[in-house]
Structure formats: structure tokens, C-alpha cells
Image (cartoon, helix red, strand yellow):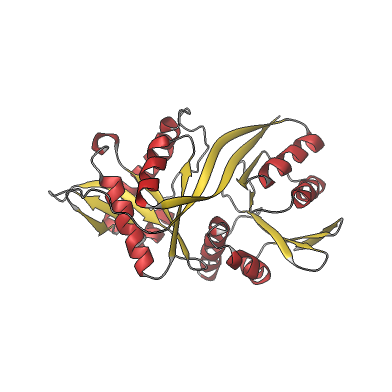
Amino acid sequence: MSTVPKAGLRLWFCTDPGEFLAAAGDYLGADPVVSTVVTTIAHRLLSQRTEGIPQSDHSWWLVVSDDSGTVVGAGMRTAPSAPYPPFLLPMPDEAAVALAHALHNRGEEVLAVNGALPAVEVCAAELTRLGGGRVQVTQHTRLHELGELTWPPPAPGNLVVATEDDVALVTQWVAAFMGDADEQAGRPRGASAHEAPDQAEMLRRLHAGRLWLWVDETGNPVHLTGANPPSFGVARVGPVYTPPAQRGRGWASNAVAEVSRRIQAEGARVCLFTDQANPTSNKIYAALGYRPVVDMANLVIVR
């Protein structure tokens, strides 16, 4: 762990997700929807650590506090593949600038930054000022939370929990989801540099019962919806994928509605991300009762 003081701010880096959650828990829990990505990954990696699953050597967690000791921001760098983008939660502009200086002084190569606006823009801009290059936006995302669920017109079939027997199918569909999401948003396939699905991770999610298939009236799987386990009382839905030949039949709306209902019935709040460049998915989720919470972005630094 390390501490970097900057003009009334304290940037504390650590490698233990448990220490991070202990230090930033009140801050994260105060707005658990906005912090959903960080908290779900922290809890997942903490669980994996207890199971003996090795963590990435370059991973870190960040807590930003002011001179009174109040936590005012947080972030992480836990992505398993290059360019290992840090993910930032909201923080004061001066904290985002201080983080850029800290990473530069630590000698870390940062060629992408994801997370909440405007923190990611401020941090990326300062990184280019210090190290050169220019910032490009690869994806604008929007985080939504479900209010009162509005049911879509019913579709034939029903939702079933995916099992270990479905691992090949769900792994294939998650991989296809990433490329299709780029195409539907008008980007080349692979433009968003999503990580390829890991079958071991798919098996962990299947064992946890957090992947569902919508099957049609013949029992044929036609759609996949996933969700993270609740963290600080919030569960995040995703991925949501329908193969091209099955689209336009209401599978996605009905599956997401039923998964959302089950999560709310467990006593958790429900959120999900949309790609702002994909009008179809934004329209579907808005019709179900999802409302915007915060805008985020994935940025790359081109040198």
C-alpha cells in the first residue's frame, strides 16, 4: 500500500480489496448504485482470494480523502487484460488531476481510463499533458436504476436458470454480445476492447445462479440475461443478449423484467448500464421503468 498527499488530498493505494472496502465502505455505501462496478468487483475478488484464486500483479485500489479524512473518491485498477484501464468513481476535479500525477510518478503506463464523468476526462487530460498523446472516447455509457417495474407485452416461453450444462452456449453468447453491442452502436466489432469471456468465470456465475435463459414454447434457448450478486444492496443486470435471428420478439424485455422482479423480490435495488449510442436498448429499458443515474465513459489515450 502507499499514500500520496496532494494539496489537501490524500490518495491511498492498496492491493487488498478487503482493506479497500474497510476504508471506503461508508463512501461506497452512501451511493451504492453509482459505486456498483467497484463494489461488485471488490467483493468478487475478495471472495476469490479466500478461495485461493490468484489476483493480477498490477491491481490496486484507491481511496481519496480530503484533509479532514472524509473520503471523497475511489477507484481501482483490476482489469485482467491490456490496457488495464483504471476505473474511477466520481471525485473532485483536483483529485482526478492528483491521481494523474500519482500514476505518472509511479511510472504506470495508463493508455485507457473508464468510469464516471467528469473524473475520467479530467484524469485522462492531465495524463496526456504529462506524458503526451491525445484522448479518444471509445464508448459513452449511462447507468440506470429501476424504479417501478412496468411489464412489457408478454412473450411466449419462460425464464429458466442456466446451469453448468449451458456453459458452452452462455460463453459463446457473451462473446457475441460484446461484438454485437459495438455494431449496434455503429462501431466496428471489437472497438470497445471488451475482455473475452473466461469459461471459468462463466462457470462461477452459473454455479451462483446468476445467469438466466429465456426459452421459447418449445424449450429452445433464445435469450440470455445475467446479473451480479447484490453488493451494498444493489444488483447490476448484464449481459443482456439475444441472437440476431431471435430479435424483435420481446425475449429481452420479458427476461430483463422477470430478472429485475426477482432481484427486487430479494430486497435489492436493480441497476444496469446502457450504451448511449444504442437507441434500441435505451428505449427498451426506459419502457421497463429504468431511469438514468449517472453518465460514464471509456476513454483511450493514443500516443
